[in-house]
Image (tube, rainbow, N blue to C red; front, side):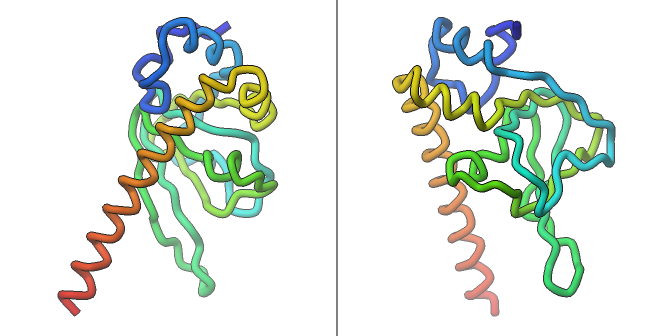
Length: 152
């Protein structure tokens, strides 16, 4: 079983107390990806939510004309794959690549959904954190869009 204390630095679990972290730790699986390897590709089946323990992950999309467009570079303690889980997607809509040797924690879609049923208070806290981070990302993107439009 995963040590709950190892999950404490993860941004997604910032609102959880020690007992709640212990519950989540039972569902976490560690994974390791060498530099340059794909974690998942656009169109592949979804496998869950990922949390970055160590390393960096590039999130990208392939354009219609075959170019790679980087959407984000995520570092330690950030998470990704959450949209696939909460939107019940069966395939990924982006590519993710380990930019350096990367250690991840993964919670399978099934375990995530199971926690929603068995521990709604924990999942409320997790979803509230996701919503806060998504809101911050939308505000950041809006600012970038406005700057691009003004400079055009």
